[in-house]
Image (cartoon, rainbow, N blue to C red; front, side, top):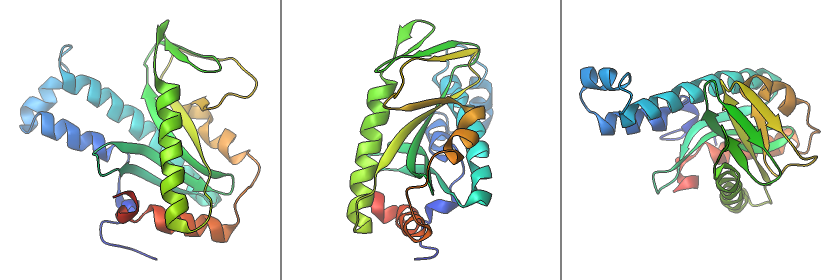
Length: 204
């Protein structure tokens, strides 16, 4: 397919978050000040942006090993997939969560942060299922998508369960774990999925 208009391969990590921050505060000076205000909504978005940039840098390193990565893949609804990774071991939707200095615990079906429950697992699974449906239809063959959560700057991560439905990994472990998985896609399949995924019309 090659380069297309609006090619998603040009996206930077966190581009969707940057757009949201600009929408919340169009004034550049006030936007900068709000990033340091404890009660500002922009501060939480800015923390998320840091996490996506950290994860994005790690994932970009996989390109030299035959992987493709897309960032900020936006649905027509305005929601986005933080990162979409395509390579020999399959296709992965990667959701970044930055929890600086906090304790993250993951059982079979739930994640807690400093003891508080989250909906991260259900949301990540739904995102992967939706991406698989869209990519399968556009590619003309079945595309399985596995959900991953990249945890950034946590003080501690504990994972319980032998075969968790979602891979929950500290960002530093992403390249090692993903490249260590068994190959399931041929180079032709990988290239086809990437060409389809980088076209914004696929997600519209």
